[in-house]
Image (cartoon, rainbow, N blue to C red; front, side):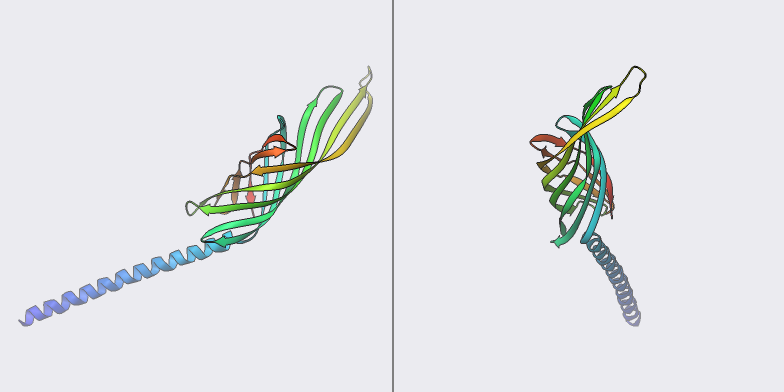
Amino acid sequence: MKNLILISIFALSMNTAQAAQKYKKIEAATHSNSTAMSYNTQQDSGFKFEARPGFGTSASNFTWGINLEGKYGFKISGNTLFVGLETGFFRTGLGSNDFESYAINSIPITPSATFEFAVSNKIKLYGGASVGLAIGTLSHSISNNNDFGFGAAQGTSNTQTAFMWKFRPGMVLNDQFVAELPIGTTDGSFYFMPNVGMRF
């Protein structure tokens, strides 16, 4: 009888120790998750700046440039709504030969809104839009060459303002690297300019 009581006490103490160990593991995991969630919240919300160079097509012409965007993030049910302003510089070639060339240099000014959600600890997807104006300068350069290869370069330019919008699906990796596939129109012409850059 005495031995049975001792065995019962030993088994009870072992169960208690195992339960305590399991509780410590659960507590540690909960703390780790809490810390990670807090870190993600700090990473997602607040002011962000992005620089995203890229190239593509506008009105069936080759276009290259850089997107610059400042935005502020608001947490909504674990996801993030960003509201900001997008600008940059873009150059669209309209054709050239030995004597003349045409190009459009433009600066967009477009308020933006994007909604970002996590699909894993490292990857976030987003979708949104930018709508506003593109201020462009149409440049026409003429080169007057003589038989000796010398001549004077002449150029004319005029400034135009065009309405533009674009839908912006994209991806963020490690809250730092950004890739986007914007598609829309500028002055009624098709616009597509994939870009990759950094978030700060």
